Image (cartoon, rainbow, N blue to C red; front, top):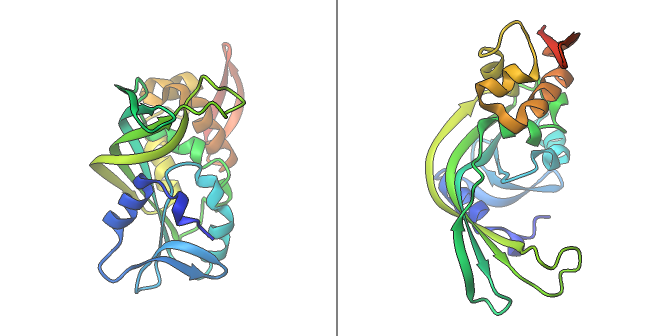
Length: 221
């Protein structure tokens, strides 16, 4: 079961925002707890990171229910670091910016569901705040603050994909028939290029065709 005490404010805000009028939150279903159960039987799952962790739930739900995964992508983030007593040490804008292409890293454990017609996605582009705290008891790296909460600042826009193949098609439509990771980087993937090609390959949408210079060459199937 989901422990709502540990639920981030970001997750809670998105759940409240996207819950339809007749939907119910934190509902038991087939031995698990779903974030939102609609009166139509449709399931909505809010997942702020690590989509692959939904694998067990999805394998239970999808044979009998349509499932919509809502995944936020933080275009802009602010980091607030607290002292151990809860007072604010500092707040700054994060240099990191989210990207559509990060979805391929998140989906790495779900490629086997590529053809499932009951699984759809909504990518939500947001601004968020990350709350961290310094705790002397942290042993692995006492100089690195630990994340204790995430908050929603603003929803900018969203994109709906009727299935996982539609997410992949957005990339495949932008690259040539034969391509390398450099071509994927050129359309904005940056550090997520290798995750993108790996996922497309595992989903059997592209094949490896040897080398082009120092880069692996791929071809659309």
